Image (cartoon, rainbow, N blue to C red; front, side):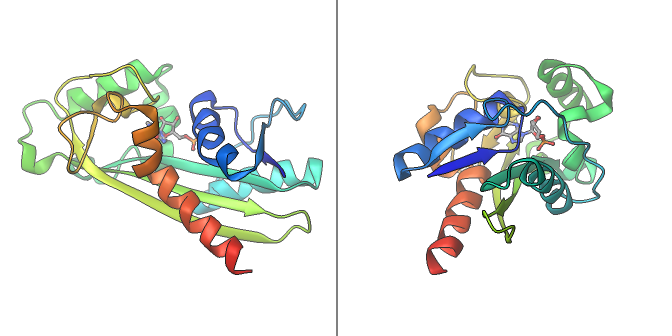
Length: 194
Ligand code: IMP
């Protein structure tokens, strides 16, 4: 069953492929579907932005589409970067963004370093019907970047119950526990009930 991922983020697409392909889905990235657009994220929530992305790609394809809007919320920064995670402070690379967050939390004690990854998925079926699912992954911000796996803020996020960052976890471990994995599990539960 073909499913298009409404994203140009290679890190996300890789994770969706790893999780969905063993379940029998043929995961096609937006680019592989021949769509060369970057949908503007003008929404004010993860949910609104996931819907904007999924709807834009659905309108062009009329095939089943899945979009995720995700990011990291840092308690000490009152939930920032949140929905602006991919373009935080207009910084141009993951490394600049993670360094900026680390700098803002310099000297902040461990009990105040709580953070969580959030993922909202919007799924649209061939008939245009929408479903939403959310996932959260709680943890703490590290004091330095560590690890080469994953993408984005993974090198500075230590999931609760772990001593390593999500960039040091094996991809298959991250894909069992992450906000994205939890949201997908939730979505599949909803779809299987239909
Ligand atoms: P979006 O394309 O607006 O959903 O951007 C999501 C951004 O949030 C990414 O570019 C990353 O910076 C961050 N992010 C989301 N999920 C993850 C993850 O699993 N690991 C690390 N960073 C993530």
